Image 1: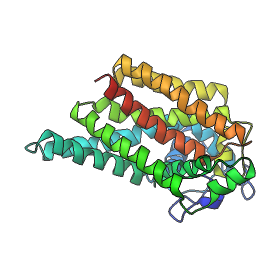
Image 2: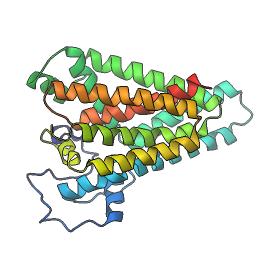
Image 3: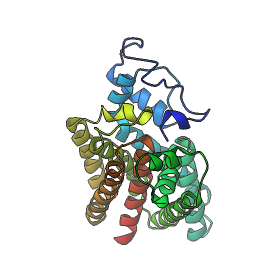
Image 4: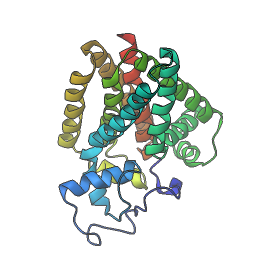
Length: 279
């Protein structure tokens, strides 16, 4: 996902730590951090050159990026609901789910789904140590990558369809926020396990204070947007997601952007699942 070896031509031209330092790039203000986070995680921010330190500091804005993505995708689905008001509810919900998931993937350049596929391939192989990371960096998709994308992607489509049928607009906004907060938590959990690449630059920014702040943002928004039962379940399952990915990284001696990307997709799916359970 965020490893330098796997960047695609559509990604922002972000330099790695070996080519750019804080001394060669202008200092970033707090609002610059929001622009950097948007440009790094989505298509919405401007392409720009920034230092590893600025990228690390932008991690505090990750939940804000989730809010932006969630709001745009939810607004698009709501607009579709208005346009197709005469259609059966099931048809509108199905079309809305496809629009939501596809638009979110497009806005984020598919980075998080790429991370999920890479993690599924490496984990499914049963490899350990450096071989684990070699499989994860391989640009080819294996059987486990396909299985992971079909399982999680298909599951997310079905869950989002049900959430739309239930009128759970708050969950559609909240899920991307929770996903980015989970990413920050995972970065904190693996902050001493960085591997060369863009993901490593983020780990330094995941200080305990920043992590707590990001989690609190997600908690406050979650309590306002979804039922408390779904909120509690999503929090518990989120701990399982972050804990499992952190354990996978530690078992193989490192933490990288693919694992953090997988945490975003999995946490979003957890939120939708929890809302459906307590419909």
